[in-house]
Image (cartoon, rainbow, N blue to C red; front, side, top):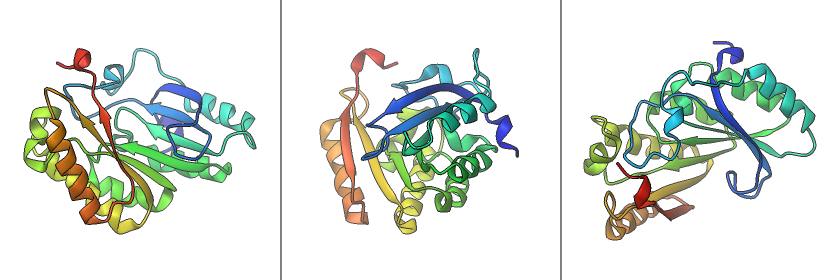
Length: 201
């Protein structure tokens, strides 16, 4: 599918934290199959947004930032839910930018095909596999997410696994278990971030 059909819900023109070690822009894609209880970007959940930025406008912006930005990160929402993502990534790479991806691992088969196109991935790991459905409110989400973990590690791509410790949904002891499990599987970068109780459902 053509990159022009990518549904973009937002753009951060400059960040130093969304792709470790690189100056990047973040493209927020529209749509996510999960309904996480502490979702940080609920306006990006629907497949179509109230306000969308044309992909041509994103390309025009990136063209003006050649030599100033190192990378472009696709975030969401869940970027892998969009069929146009591979072509958008290829277009960004052709412009000379590194490409990063923020994902929850919702679609492991799609992710597996994308990994060779990426330079870095930030993958959210929300819980032990058995506890996933309570957070995502989506059946079998834990199986998909942990399969995605395996694929990322097998690919050898630079990565960061992010765990959200939340007093209601994932206690610190469980977050530490997930961290230790990821490290035992071969993860080189794992961070635990604190969830905000006021955003919970």
